[in-house]
Image (cartoon, rainbow, N blue to C red; front, side):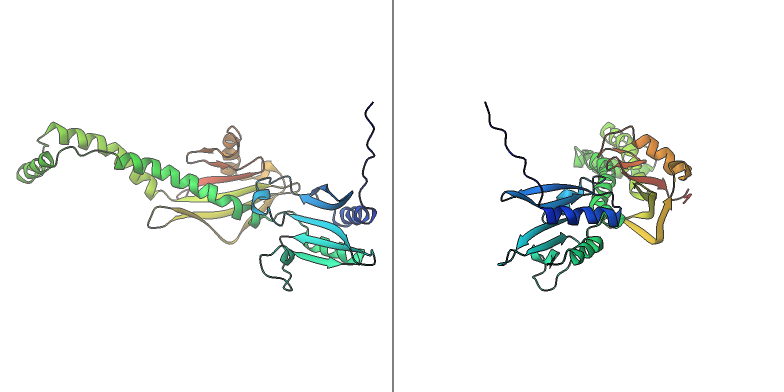
Length: 286
């Protein structure tokens, strides 16, 4: 018969600190214990609304707290967070993101100050590249098709140009007529896309409010998109039915596609709680 293994219980001091943290902060963060040397002596916190952020902060995590001991077996609480900048250590090192204390009250204050859910800005900084890349691909698809139009014979092109110069009316060769017919629609769509201007909205559903950040999609000389939000661009809505109609209808369409997928000229669904919405700039309603 297999021997029952005794369940390893969390370190009492650490469990007390975590309990105090949840009471004082009323946070929505989840946590899990990490087994270190015979006792659960570290706790990681997670913001389950945005699982893609775990990759960005793989080294520092959203936040954690662990217990170590000095030579007198006195517990020392080590709080780690991406928001901590401890100038006693080299910038970018693991210790740079930590603060230590032998006092449970001081450790609690550090946790309350620095172990926080991801901000809207942090979430957007992580996901905005996917959004702008989707727009880049939208333009590039038409650009690639346009660039793939083949010119088969330089001689016939020259003859056609001379013919146009003399007559100015009608193409001479069938090759040139076919080329002109083919490129007209393709180039027209490519030109429409590179000249299109959009207002964009970053929409994040949180437990209490819906955060909407308005911005504009700007293109550089290479036709690459960037998202730029203006001053006071963030608005909070208490319920989904209070969202502007254009944003609400676009979210309805995007909820019909999978996470990470987009709908042309509508937007992209980053995950269950995060969306980017497009709106033609000549018809803003924000």
